[in-house]
Image (cartoon, rainbow, N blue to C red):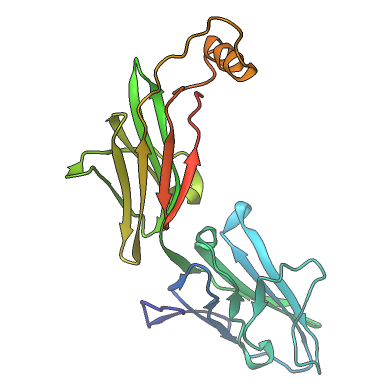
Amino acid sequence: NNIYPFTKSLGSGDDGWSMKVHSEVRGMEGYPVVLPCTFSHPQHSQHSSLQVLWRLGHGVGATVLYRCTSRPGTPTCEPGPQQDQRYRLEGNPREHDLSLRINGATLQDSGRYYCRVEVQGREHVSFEDKMGTRLRVEAAPKILTLAVEGSEQSGYTALCRVQGSPLPDVQWLGPDDLLEGSLVGPLSQGSAAHFHTVSQLRDVEPGQQYTCSASNPLGKEQATLYVLPPRPPMSMTGASPPLLLLLSLSLGAKVLLLVGMGVWVVQGGALQGISCWAK
């Protein structure tokens, strides 16, 4: 499931060292992905221990994702006891292959990866790829939430939060035509903002249905919102059941929003009820 858009590998050399990686690798969410990395150096010996290290990011903020040691006479590279099992070495360091396998790739795995090898012996030498490999994990659109905010006085707004890579295009559909929505600024900072987006539709009217449609080159997903008209106000005279009293208190505290308004979401053929509350 790997896609290598650039077939030319990058090489680096220093005192006879050589390391080759792909400039970019693309993978699909939920599938394994392999980051190729091979090396050679003039002092390589089967009698030396090798330590392999993979990092996500560069500099102070880098995260070490994988580390293993290949000892003389052993065919495997042994990771530490706390190693995350999602990562494993696909290549054999004894054959100059440091390729890393990531199982069950997620959108959060997207980033730039660097491989490093250390030859442990009388002269401890090491070499690291300086260019890195950019991993781009792609995913079909997924609608995370669909909700309504606002009040009868201020008006109602529908919000549709989606994720996907490439970032999905979001459209709103009414019963008969395309509606004009608008994007909301990213709710999070960092890499998550690159594959999350929120679209809003203003002036949502009770008694209507609205469909959020998210699409990118990998697929399309839709969710439909049914907004029921508010119920007629109920008389509070006489003995009121506890539930009515609770609603009255909630209204007075401005906690409960859209009393008498039901919101239902149809997604994937299933009918789901969701609640609307004030922030």
